[in-house]
Image (tube, rainbow, N blue to C red):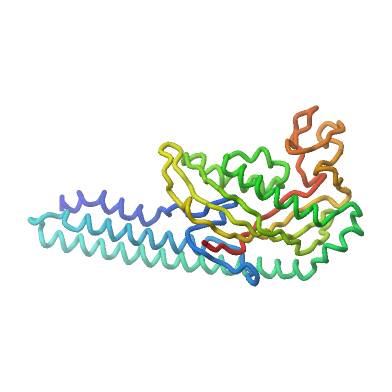
Length: 321
């Protein structure tokens, strides 16, 4: 019995190793890139969710569990009491069956919920796309709007977002993101900060930018666009400089769907991407550029209140070259 009690800590470690999930393998701004190719750049309406990451994590946990089981199997010793060993094996078997059954049921419930949420999101996306209007008609709403200038701005923003992501500081692009999306991206970036890791996005080349259409939702204009880019994507340890995920030798082609929003009562200026407005915090006249900060009160003015701000980015496909 004493030997069984000595093995309880080992059993606890095994159970904890099963319960604690492994880290994901997502990379690049928005954590869309990963270890495996996925999606279809033209026909897929499904955005990349955590299913593939969960599958990888399950396989990693399985390998780890097998390794743990191997290392622990001889621990009872050659002189173990047969009865005590039999009781121990029965306890382990019962706990394993119960744990596996509970995790399997929980996993099925999660997959079902994800499938339901994905179906709802896909339906909403299809409805939204069905109501999209041709971008050529947007000039009736804003005569100063230029689709060509907008596509160039998207390409510029993509590069700036990746640079800010690699620097682990979204401040330079803060006002080009809505409050909600900035918080979401900064929370993802905070994982790299805490782990002392850097996600490098090198050799950036924007291949194409296409505007799918526009819509008006309440007091906001919405534009949906697709961006296809080529990048080299990997993560390094800040202390050792060694690569912990990804590859600095393999290029990837990724396609994203961007959703941008702007208040409908503003006509944007086409003068080098700046718009002269009144600061909503202090009332001073200001000209916003890359800083997005009022020179008088120091407040950050979100782009969506005067110009286009990114509300969401969805990964559509990835291909490793």
